[in-house]
Image (cartoon, rainbow over all chains, first blue to last red; front, side, top):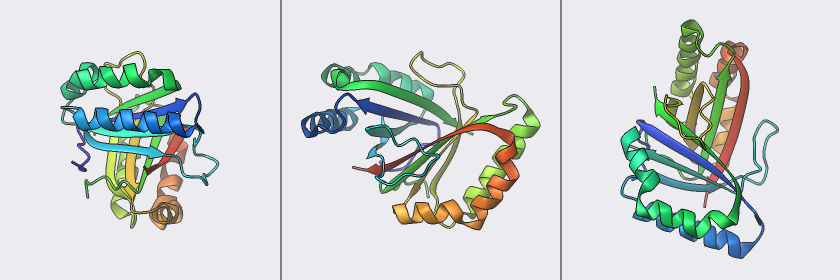
Length: 107
Length: 107
């Protein structure tokens, strides 16, 4: 499941309201982990945090990042509305203040 | 080489000066492809473009994206200054107007 499917890569950056709060961080990652484990469509379920030391050109201001891939744009579309995704949003959207999403299809 | 190494994920978005110019696009992708193929450190060499139809919350304004992974922060650091990378920047930096870089270490 670690293979990155070049058909569709979906990258999301989350800025938590309380990025230093251990309880919020734990709640967020548990909820995101559960969502990705239960998703019928997501592949390459990567969750990350910015390295402490960052270069000038790098945006290291986010709290968590997520990189997932899909076998098609259709699968990504289904993932948007699958129950596991809606549950994650319901559980965790109060924890974040900003989200940036990038979608990419392999050339 | 498609396995995403969860140790370090490096995501870059490029905005070309002339995003619709086929010659610029071809030159950029050939140069980036060559760089990634010659890199001693980059894994999961994904190059993408935004899907035509995008949702409201998605930033689909970039021209090209790149997702690569590394076995460690040290490898990513070496990649920054390896000859193939410097050649890519020399060949292609005149083609872009903006770059955003995100680094993530797996949790």
